[in-house]
Image (cartoon, one colour):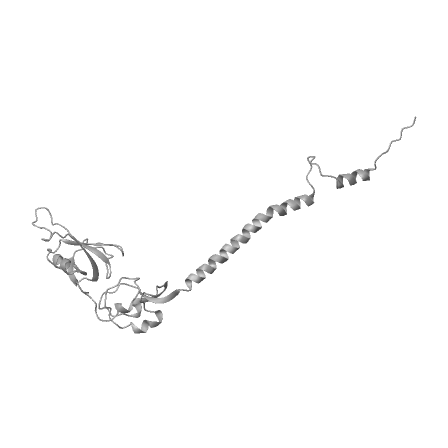
Length: 236
């Protein structure tokens, strides 16, 4: 008896392996499949990169639009007291966004204010306004100016024209007959108008603007019993 044995050529077997499904037999997948998987995984990163670029562009556009409302105006490079004649060294240019209702002096109008006296005292960094230059505007209605002779330690060294302060009554030493003003006031809000130190004098004269009634109370306090506390720009 004879048996017919058919032997599949090796070429047919190789062809079936290529055309048939790939089976994970512990070997690495074909290079073509690795490249396809890598491309699929890179898609989210590409999308993330596009979103980041769009966000940066949007932020740049927003900043550009906001900066378009800024204008060059004059500000004080240092504190100046009332009556001080402005010089170019007192001024500096700043670019700020100004509300339409706020009066400022444009940087191109510096020639109109240089050489004119200050109508009020302003601290360094304050924006210059048209009303701040000209005839003295101090004291204003209902206000008065009092001069305080102060020794070192009775006022901060940072105090200058335009600073908001509190004038504080300080009782004398024990055994000294001192008392606060008759109406009971011990703290008075004020604004510094000038600070001067006379030659050969250990006292510094600090002039402050405050209400008329407070000025009278402060003037009645004996010398050496007042101190100044400097407040923030919005302090009271």
